[in-house]
Amino acid sequence: MKNFYIYLIVMAGVTYLIRMLPLVLIKKKIKNKYLLSFLYYIPYAVLSAMTFPGIFYSTGSVVSAVVGTVIALLMAYLKRSMVTVAALSCAGVFLTELIMKII
Amino acid sequence: MKEQTSFLKGIKDGFPICIGYLSISFAFGIYACSCGLSVWEAVIMSLTNLTSAGQLASVPIIVAGGTLAELAVSQIVINMRYALMSVSLSQKLGKSVKMLDRFVIAFANTDEVFAVASSQEGTVGKRYLYGLILTPPLGWTLGTLLGAAAGNILPAMLVSALGIAIYGMFIAIVMPKVKTEKPTALCVAVAIVLSCLFYYVPTLKAIPAGFTIIICAVVASGIFAFLAPLNIAEEGNDQ
Image 1: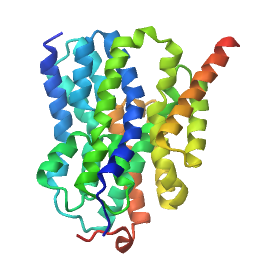
Image 2: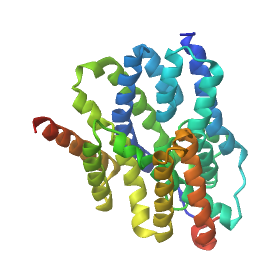
Image 3: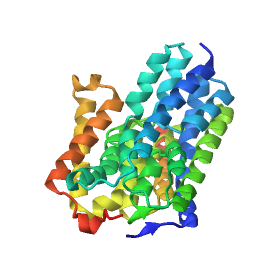
Image 4: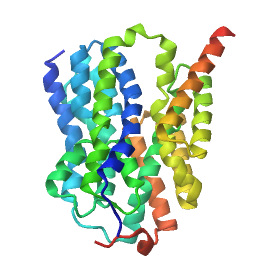
């Protein structure tokens, strides 16, 4: 292992530049209707592509992850807050794995 | 047009992210230490990077003594989505956000912070943004510390259950829009189908996850930007 702090500076630097450059360089308001629409859809497309199918493999077993996913979808549909959705989803995973262990 | 300027509203919106990060970074702390990083190395990495996937990918490279180029490329591939988010966020900033503020806000432009800022009506002001980004880095760093220091004491099942927390947050952010806006719902559906294709089709699986997320998001958003462009007057783009 090389000096940890050299690695740290490289990764922190690269990550910051990626975030900072567009935010600092693009000062004008974009007027193009299609480009604006594209940017409007981006956050939802990114988050959902990151969530599925990744969520199914985020816990100890696919079964518990599916239970957690269903709970999260349901709670979010019922307009529960971000923390409630995440917490109940975790609880569902935990209980499912507990039950699976007992069975 | 409306600008969200309340610092307190920012704090209130940022706090759930902070709590969510506690659990996610907890898992990262456990992982980093189990791979051979020290507690403080894990903590300082979280404090300076503030990126879940990027940090996860970096640990094996660092522990194996990989090259700096390898590390840099992995971070670029995984984190390039933030560039997309920063472009999008640049259009959302209110007039109160000055140049110096942009340098600060960029540091904390995570998936969740970006998503919450995006979901505000109108533009977001400097005071709101500072409120929003105040607590998430604290939660991210503290959670890493707790996980790194105490993770091995916890039962594996509890750690496993925490793994889904970040995705629960994503669903909570996306669902309200999916419920009320049909084009967004369809765009999300296309992004998910593409993402699943990249994951399950053998030849496509070779493409790094960081790239596939960008491809999925750009294709899905591109299609719907043309099929269902926003009504500019309604969404507001006036200075």
